[in-house]
Image (cartoon, rainbow, N blue to C red; front, side, top):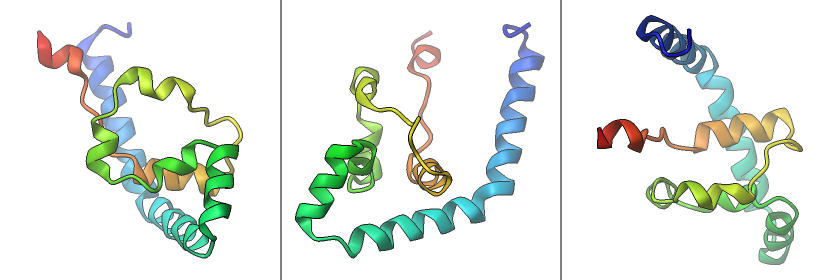
Length: 104
C-alpha cells in the first residue's frame, strides 16, 4: 500500500496540512529557543551542544544544513527533546529533497 501513488499523495497532503496548522506554534518555539541560546555564554552554549548535538544545528544557516550528507545525521537523536525543542527544530530545519527520486 505504501507504494501506491494515491497513498503517497495522501501522506504528502497530511504533512502539508500539519505544517500549516502548526506553523505559528513551531515558529514561536523557535524564537523561544533562539532567545534562550542568545542569553547563554559561549561556554554554556558549548556545554549545551555537547549535551545535545541538535543544539548545534540552531547555530547553522539553512544552506549548511541542506549540504549535510545523510551519514552526518547518524549522531543525532530527538528522543530527549522537549516539545518546544522539537517544534523549534522542525521549524528550523529546511525541507530536504529526496536525492533518489532526483537521480532516476
